[in-house]
Image (cartoon, rainbow, N blue to C red; front, side, top):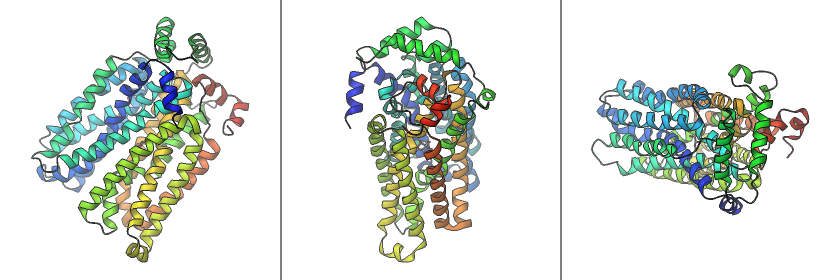
Length: 466
Ligand code: BGC
């Protein structure tokens, strides 16, 4: 287990870990906004006279902004660099957070939540993109997953901030406004990090790429900067494509499907119904409102703890094993929730079962599909098309997130609560089959090797066997 810690210690001079942590602040913004709104809504709805429809728009305008942010920044990350795209995203985030905190009516709040969404959508994939392009293969899984760790910490932080500001006047303004701090930290922090060597090489700036790489690999006994530069150059010469149309071409299409499948299944197993509605699910089991909110904190903590475990294991056990095992856990816990809500006897005699199932569910997501989706899409695409391809997968992820968020409550009315969980369980079985057949192992290999392998026939056959 200590492999990742040991390797990051020996693979360099602290610069690699520092720049990865700064880039991962993007994940914190993402997680904070995911977690904060349910608490803030409780209070702002009275202040701003927001009815159910207005509330739904306050929540989902961020998701729509995120979809658009992910579309725009796919091009931006190529044109002006990963680094500057993230500086802009942090700055827009600060403006969005100030606007939300000062909102005087519902349309103003919806508008600024949309602006916040632009920044969140951008940060959500430019963070893993940046980290994967600076990391050496042996620790890339753990480092890229700092981003998922930041997402889950952001969600937990939001639960705690909601809790801390419960009794304060204008509390929802504070809850939404506190987000200025990580936003500013991202914008300023990104000014201090270098461009990624792969982006520099793509722009023909080889000397700068070499200098950055030498800095990032200093002290790493396994590093071979010349070879890394050569490999990037070769891969760039082979693959020069950078539009969505290129991505849909036959050669790259299988990779497009892997990214889209991971993106959509990550949301269709229902994770955000647990994140957004955990207190509702728990209070349906008969708990009081206040204990439901307290138990929701357990869900947040479990999410963080198991993401730490994923960070430590991804480069050792491999992506596929964690993904597949995690998805089995998702299916079993969803089936348990479905059976629980079907059986009055269980509800009467085993109230704790719902909480246990929720915790197993979130732990299974945190060790598998949570980090692995963001990691994989940062690994499987050739440099020339990586940012556009990641932006396509990210758009699909936010769109699927939006769809699940707006349908969960009405699905409950339509096919009952247990029916909804049966549906998610069935979707996790499909997800498992898709991952088993289509998702390659990428552990310990350079981005360039992964690319060569995935784009050749023999590689395609071998790729799921590793
Ligand atoms: C997902 C989010 C989710 C979070 C929960 C992320 O990987 O993309 O939609 O809220 O994990 O931990």
